[in-house]
Image 1 (cartoon, rainbow over the protein chains, first blue to last red):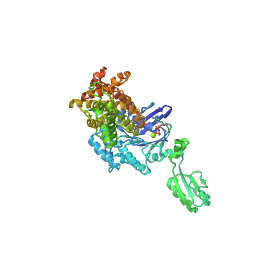
Image 2: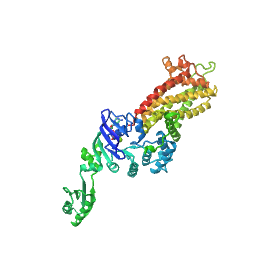
Image 3: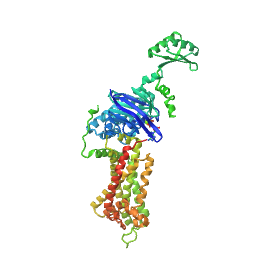
Length: 317
Length: 283
Ligand SMILES: Nc1ncnc2c1ncn2[C@@H]1O[C@H](COP(=O)(O)OP(=O)(O)O)[C@@H](O)[C@H]1O
Ligand SMILES: [Mg+2]
């Protein structure tokens, strides 16, 4: 499949602040692409350039083959944008908002009407459709915002931190919606500071920091850069720690670490859940009581730490 | 996918006006749903009317009024109302400044800019809605005026011309207000910046006091101030007392000068505002 978003060497400076420092991106059509980075990494700046809102100081970018600087209107016809804050009108109703955006996309009125209804149903907003947005919750606003950017069935959808500021339930609700979109074939470029969000949604992830790509790949390849799975066992009786460690060495692929204060043993493993079962069996055979056992994949937090030497949260502080 | 989406064919009025009307509808719905805003934009000039009419009324003599009668509150009220109309429509520009600053802050302008719409559409809609709102404001003000003794003395047709001139002026200053609004970092600053230039502009005019009562060096400024010519035009069209009219061309040809000023101001500020709009982004 061809690349629907291509960016080469994007540079954007705000005075002394280098927001983008030679950013390269290639997003294959029909994928969810995650742009992951801490606050201030340059995610919004990248999205603004790709959605024609901002001109880069250097570098080029195209969406669906159209140059974002030279053919902005052609780009605007194929994209949808949901910015970092719900950019919908407070005083209009949900349906009026959708109609306004549909009209501004120059779609046929009858189509706008039908499509609005379809989107309101899909985003679970039919009950609130004819109420002013002042009565909407944060999650509802976000869903309407997303609906508005889908009114013209864009080929490429830009979602800039779509779940920032949402409670966990609305966040998971929105994830479901985004997953559905991809099933329709829409290409999604999603920015996020949440490592679990990129993990959940994106097939390909680009990690950026200080306006530059510092790593890229699937969530799995990124995790493999940090190391494989870890088996973590907490024993009930601390005097059995050594017996447990011996039992686990039979399944471990590397050095088994014993943490005596937490009564915890960590063993590097391969083979996923089968290995987990095997480990539990050998602990059982050694008559070790287990308080907790878990197979832990490295998180993208671990990835970030391994790549930059600090976690995403430390960067913000 | 996108091929399945049926597009409208280009309307006769063109995309700029089409998009402008869509945005104007949105802004006017806002006005209806937040009546407080409209209420205060009406209350302020009504208070001005009452203040000037009852507090200063007798104190400001209108030169050129019948010299055989003493300064008379009812003559001042006749003189005052067009001044209030002029000031009110000039202040309409502040709504554009604040409204755009709010839209930028909320990210709505970014959203609009990411759409394949005409680049003037948002501003055409903004200015159009702001001018339209003034119809109601002028109506309420006129009723207030009629209640305190102001009269339309020169026929309905001329009165209609007067109101149209006032609305054209409201539309014109809305472009200036839009241009300022697009430079505002936040709505709070816009609140101040939207008004600050209007006070000297309206007070350096014949809106409340006759130009002949001003210091000599200020008189030319006031005579060439488009608000003076607007107010003088409406005084003439409503058949209200004009005071002594100055020698400067704008005072001698107030309607022509008002129309020319509006044309020039729109020709300058509309392109400036649209250019700024194309580059602006929320922070
Ligand atoms: N309009 C602006 N003026 C000045 N600096 C800006 C502006 N927008 C962004 N920046 C700076 O550029 C950097 C990248 O910002 P941004 O792209 O918003 O990052 P992110 O979206 O990843 O948090 C930050 O250091 C930010 O402070
Ligand atoms: Mg951001």
